Length: 152
Image (cartoon, rainbow, N blue to C red; front, side):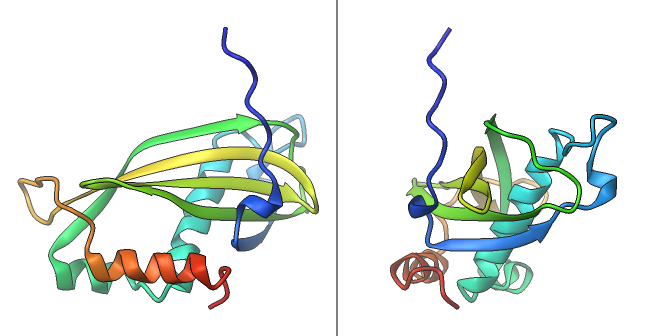
């Protein structure tokens, strides 16, 4: 068995999206059901793109591309509970030939709750998608967001 990964640090992220845990996201133990952390990751990644000045639908249509999540991973360190105010940190970690990796961290105040990774692949749009590089102008916007510390 591999060693337990280290929890994320708030200093690992320049961009944060705040969220409040809703009742329907919790399980009978009164903690967030594990699958909902992936919903939080997805919402925060979308807000990251928005903060970078990317309109996913319009920009993908303009470039005639699509993006798909091909891998999602989470490590859990402490539970979030109903009505907790949490923040999801997002960082662009890697850009490949046709993919990009985001590292995520969920925090309650300074306490790390969850660490995650999402991998997206870029493809041509349409019925027969083929891998393509992410559009350079969108990559530049994400890199600019990282450079300015996440502020929009």
